[in-house]
Image 1 (cartoon, rainbow over the protein chains, first blue to last red):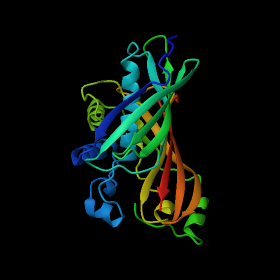
Image 2 (image 1 turned 90 degrees about the vertical axis):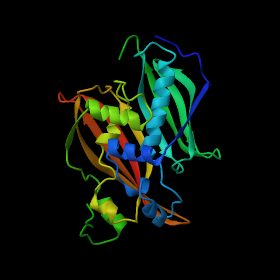
Image 3 (image 1 turned 30 degrees about the vertical axis):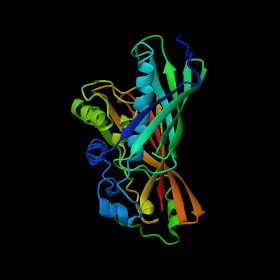
Image 4 (image 1 turned 120 degrees about the vertical axis):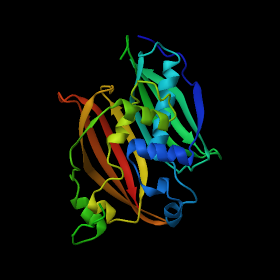
Length: 139
Length: 141
């Protein structure tokens, strides 16, 4: 079993959703709620801009964690087993969203990771945890 | 769906009575073109063949169509998502799922009332194996 010796290490990536990104995500996911691409609709509901899908932010976090682990261990030797997030604020198109992760511990073959997204002013708009399962061979 | 339910009582009471509501069962296949589109949308290499753990988000009916939810408040906000991956999905997998409404909690804040709705969806392979369990918290306000 591979042991994680990087407890406390943070890894971050900045993502920015354009209108194209939001439409691509709507098309791929099937979530066509107008708040993500119809600016008058968003304004009517009190939002200053088009909102980034919460599930797109979750997908960014999932990719961040998966790629961070795959960059440090042989391909297929770690898999994302749990991703659990709570949305605390909205993010909007063309505004940078910092996606972060930090290894917080290990219990057997499970590595615990804190994850978050933050808007440009540093406000955490998503908080959560992930669990990565370490395996002996490809999953 | 935009119809509102024909129920007596408050919208919250209607939501409480709706616990156990299920959406139609659906079957989705992890197809190459769809995987490419999803990977591109989330910023991954579109030519990759690894199936992201979150792809079952595409197999949820979002926002949920439950009439009792649409009768409460004016719009949706996503409150949270939990993916439990028991068996990673692969290209070609077919998954059967059915969204179930499992709970509601009303909160009152400065900007008015909101309802936190919990939906659970299990994605199973043709042999019945649980591949992914998703718990979604959706907010109506």
